[in-house]
Image 1 (cartoon, one colour):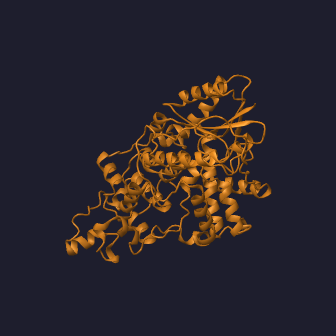
Image 2 (cartoon, rainbow, N blue to C red):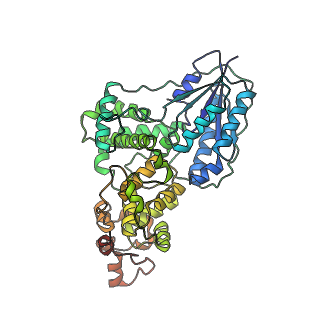
Image 3 (cartoon, helix red, strand yellow):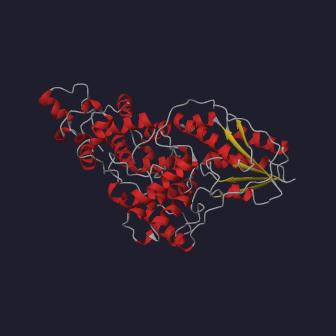
Length: 462
């Protein structure tokens, strides 16, 4: 009997999974699922303990879902991607595998791993690759010189021109296939640190429910309310997309059920959210076109020679949420306690680290990956380089967010600040963004630090 192996990576779902659908097309073939944990590789890539915990919880759910389809999910753990290749080669021999199916990953080490695998497999074993986690395959949206776009807006316009002419379909969830005699075992604990995460549920139906409710109830006001951190008005689907619990195609199809042809009104909340999914696409395409982005290199070469201050004490205070700037500190405390941060706040705190404190953006990028449940190299790197003025489409180096002004604009009454900084709970709205002024008058919040730098002075040093 023919045997197909479906290798799960960051596509931990049975719905809208092209690799899984294709692996199950031949009704006479048996299908085996596989997931390989690589803890040492995760450490090298700064994966957070929260994300590892979420992956583990999701694998338990996925194993049950595959079991209902009579597809066993095997689990292996090894140190590195090189060892991972050896595991697959051995499994192919053990189970007489004829074909391997997987959805592509685009990071440099992952692509090198897949290339190595193809070279080690027996010539009669075929690898079938799919672009299951994006709308379009990388390097298919190019400018007139047949090169990857360097600026987002022309990329988006070209993307939309292609997209609306050939809207991608949702891949079918396979039906149950013939049962195999392969026994599976409960997913063991990872040899990795564990930490609880918030906001995300590893259950497929819970994730789909969250997507459906967002498209039906919140997306219409998304453009107006997405920047207000005290409101629950972002999708909070990022971890599902990062690990492939949900796909971008599912997001699009749920969105069009509620808002057909939303792309015809680019000022709508629906289009504004879809635009964020295109940003995600853009960053994924960029790391394929420019692999050095995966190697801690800036997109703009000359910025690699910037002389950073890299004050370690300032960095520790930034990490802990003790900078003396309430909106910065509330954002960092939210990250540290939950493993997630509101997107507007990500921009504000990144600007502060890089341009107020003059600390290398790579320090911030690494710290984010070590904390985030939704850590995604392409998006995280793209966002940090945008804020640092080292990346594609980035803000000019002389543009710097004023943390006090940003706080007043997006959290005017300090509702978000008070949620995460209890020592400021009694500070009046008038002083919530500059509590040192209140402290001078009342002398009653000495437990909250003074600003570690003065923004107006820091700005002049850029």
